[in-house]
Amino acid sequence: PGVHENDDGKPWTCKELGERTPSQEATESSYEDCSNPGDGCGSTKCCKVPGMACFEKTEYWADCMETCTPGVHENDDGKPWTCKELGERTPSQEATESSYEDCSNPGDGCGSTKCCKVPGMACFEKT
Image 1 (cartoon, rainbow, N blue to C red):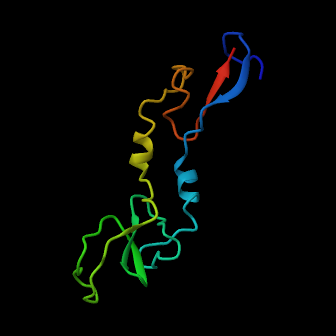
Image 2: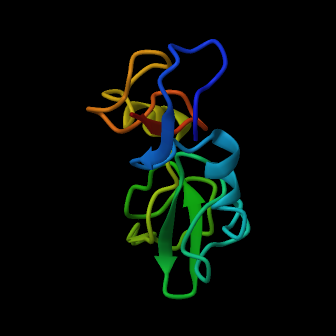
Image 3: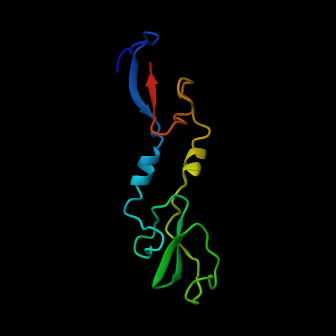
């Protein structure tokens, strides 16, 4: 709070408006307990790799993939996949960035959007 150096002399309340735009590191760390492709994701129901989702093969096996087509997969054991999506898809960096498309750039003022385009930044109120 207060007047910031190299500013117009008006004080900032520094009240955070909206939520901080997540950084790539923050997005990745929120999925650190999820599964890698090939490890099976039946218990975690989430994937570490951005853009992937956990798909069910049988009630005993599921794995992380970008897409899944029901039926038998090439180079697999011959058992069909149900391809039921378990949990939510891990957002890709592009998806994360596009969800902040209508937010403000640094220096443009964010009082109306209450969000920032740049990952890791947040919108703060100035009096």
